[in-house]
Picture (tube, rainbow, N blue to C red):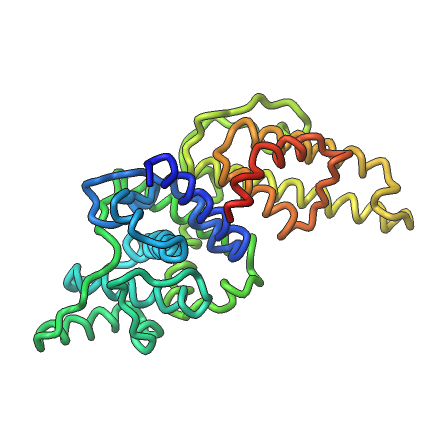
Length: 325
């Protein structure tokens, strides 16, 4: 498989996660994908998921989905938890046990070869799992090894902000999703710890217009945004449209009308069209698909092709990517 085909396949895997498990898909999309042959398998530095192309080519799509999800969910453990002197190999294996058990319960992909699979350990706090694995190692039974590579963050403070912002957004946007409701206490605890550290701003400094300016049509496209900023800004745009939709529904109810019978109906779809046009011109394909999935699947926004011309552009541009899923 060529590098281009591999990138396309990984993009399809990430979009498929958005469709099948939106909360998890949002988390995975937050991180840019970057090839790095010096990484043994793959790992997350808090801003990017670095992967070895040779390793990823050996995985099926289901194994790739599991591995990317594992890397994204492991990041908060390394950035917001202190292993307190525990052996790094045992800690990494413990994180893989805790996260892997949750992914297996949710039916996310399939574990790659060598991934720890002790369901009993996976439901314990990561500290207890690490201690058990250290005791086993002292007794001559070392852990088989973690499926993720240890990747140091380029900027620990920026990595913490990045992970905190994406976790907070995923939990806020999908509070009642089966995946979020099914999180084990150990995993939910560290995700809440990360979300509590979010400051509500963009995870990386960037000169971006307020979402309201985009909805009014007063903002130019912003290509070249960092992946984390794309994710956060697309989420903010979707939330702004959700607020507009709720306001319009309230106006319609007060007037005793159906939403499509109000003047605000046309104005709202103009705003949807401007937002989608901005996203299409500024963001990566996976983020565009995530934005549409968030509008339609979470916020119940109807994309009427007669009222939202940019919807036709989206379908034409990203049809193959969606079909690959």
